Length: 169
Image (cartoon, rainbow, N blue to C red; front, side):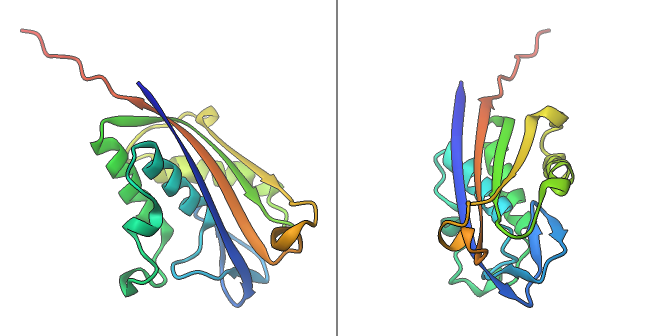
């Protein structure tokens, strides 16, 4: 049995904040304005994973009204989402992610970001290189994303039910 999930996240960009994408720090004069570290790619991935197993969204699991999550590393959100997916009996087949960022070019960093996603998920699943795709797009100067005022990410995941074989003997 397969399940799909779709995640979306957007944050305003402001000065004096780090810019993190998929757990990779990007050299930039601005960063995401967020309660946590603002990693839109990890947030969207968490939403996709939670959604695929019918477990709500990242805001339900880690509300921005809870002071425990102020400045939290989004990697811990991903750990929780991955553990919940595994506990539900699923494994990730593939991840397809798109980051939307107008002025800061991510093209040269796409492979590094994809490799870091695989590394973050490695304690749960050993994903091959071709199972994680990261694309970088602009928003063609349309809306806040296109004016360079925000960053966004869209993530789709495919999960497969893990079938445990019965022991014989």
